Length: 189
Image (cartoon, rainbow, N blue to C red):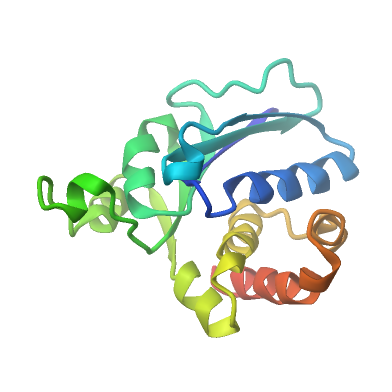
């Protein structure tokens, strides 16, 4: 059976790195894995997404609407924008954090207050204060790895070797902090 993971965020949040680490661990565990990335205007705070499909045999990395087993969102509005990709019995793992765009910053559009309540009334939702936890750890850039840990726990993939996947995908001087961030994520589901 093929499982599909859609990871969404805003440029600079580490969406692609999260996907690469997840893909590395799945490949190392012997799964056939296909991954695709959409960068959009990622350098300007635009949407970024990665799609991962894994199983015994996978023919395409593309996830159609309604096909994702899990949606991982590094920001609330991105979760709302992409919720249609999630299966009705799928799982949403979302960072409880808001990134305001130009139209919300200039007051033309109001950022909705109740995104998490609305989404959790529709699908099984794990809301993680990933950015807050990363700041407590001392580096907000590890929020994506906290979200990785939460995703791994939500999907029941804790038996895979994510420690090596992290070691193989982050700079040596940040490995220990990223491993700590991963364990924080694991403990919040």
